[in-house]
Length: 270
Image 1 (cartoon, helix red, strand yellow):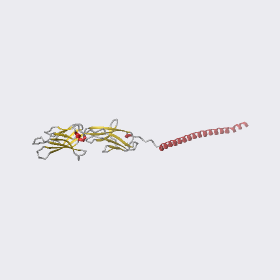
Image 2 (tube, helix red, strand yellow):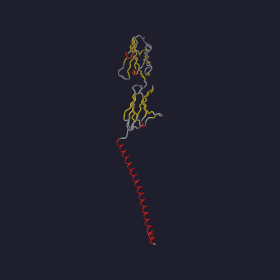
Image 3 (spheres, helix red, strand yellow):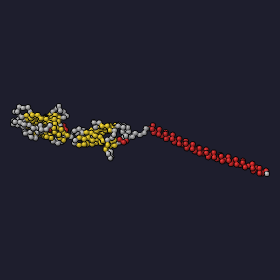
Image 4 (cartoon, helix red, strand yellow):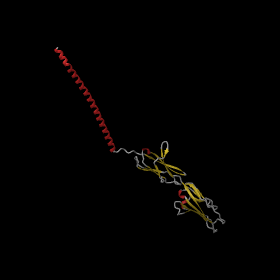
């Protein structure tokens, strides 16, 4: 093997190298490629075989795999790569009548994949004071995409102060208020790109309870009655003052009449 690892983007082709040296004729050359997938390393599968001039491909790889340099090299090409193609490949070369052990080489194939479109969801209590969880799931992506949540404002992008991150791609927003309302974005990112999804969160302020409304009505009614009582008292005091001044004027007039009557009588007898 000339390389110990190969990386390829899903859908592209990959060359898996395998070189060898033999002092004998290559008429009986035997080459076997096997794969131990990352998903099931304990169950290796045969990829392609070259034996006495014949090529045998695994049925699941027919049309996608082939030798590129026989008999001078045992390199193979893998077309239209898939994530399931990733794993540890082993190349074994044997050329009778040589009696030495077959040459064996290994390499690791990594198939990179951009993130798929994430799915955003929310659940929880959207009333003021409640708690809301935002979740973001990504079905595809190699390496595994990193998940990041942020709040999108018209003029700036800032994470809410009370957002608690979770490695699984969820965040918990506690003690929500109307100021928590807004557009939230989940970004799934790896070396091949970024995909986003959004959640529009609207926090509602709970209406006042019936008991609170009744208390407000009673308080307003009591204040109105107090103001009415004060108004009646002011009017009564005002009227009482006018009646007192009227009686005082009448008394003074009567006194003046009595005061001048004797002098008039006296003059009548002179």
